Length: 154
Image (tube, rainbow, N blue to C red; front, side, top):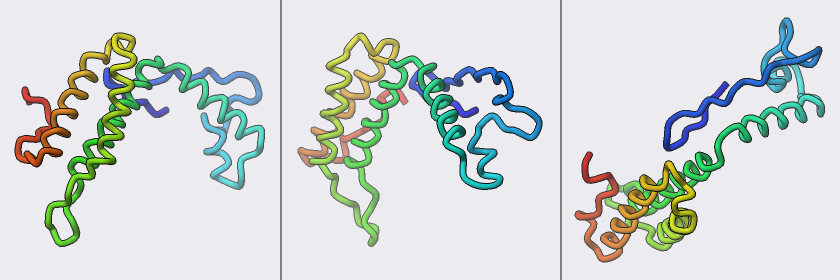
């Protein structure tokens, strides 16, 4: 079973016990789609069972961890647009400030809007947002050398 990354570490959902004749038996797997991959399309019942399993796995993760994970995704999206890959000729690409601004604002809406409700991730997310906002302002003002996206104590 796969794990889900959260800012507080990897989260491994508890496996659901198999029960009755629909559970995993000889030759079966934990996931109906693995059986289907061996020989054909999954049946509607297998697809429904997989959907229920996926929903139960997602429901087992604390909501605050999922929201924090999405916030980290927005941070990464903003960084991607603030520090784009070089152009094909090797010259530095200009930051896409309008795209980065939207990602920064979305992250700010989550972090500022939810505040302490994001605990235990609230402090780390506030710090990341502050650093991202500072980098944005520095890049927007043309001070690209001073724009550091990594924490100062690293």
